[in-house]
Length: 114
Image 1 (cartoon, one colour):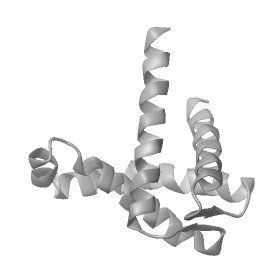
Image 2 (cartoon, rainbow, N blue to C red):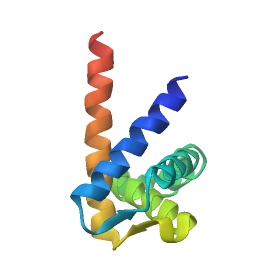
Image 3 (cartoon, rainbow, N blue to C red):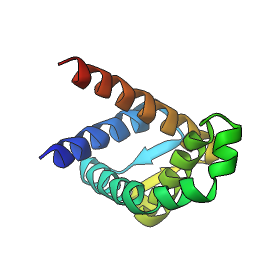
């Protein structure tokens, strides 16, 4: 149940980011939900491999390189989605990954206080 809630929250966040940034396009709520599911799958299976491969760089940057990895997973999601989800470059993906990460940190802090 918690996974489904995270999927829906991510879909709403992606829609909000698409509305806020002109460089991010989503064709609709269905595309946002599908993108959120794909992003969840990539974060489960691909992201740990990327983190392991880039561990020295991540340590040197004190963990900031994880935002780059998040941006890469967003770009992979965009590539898999085709025309229904577009990001106009790495900079937009990096800003979107920062926004998603900050929102999820706030949600975790709120959840931990309960």
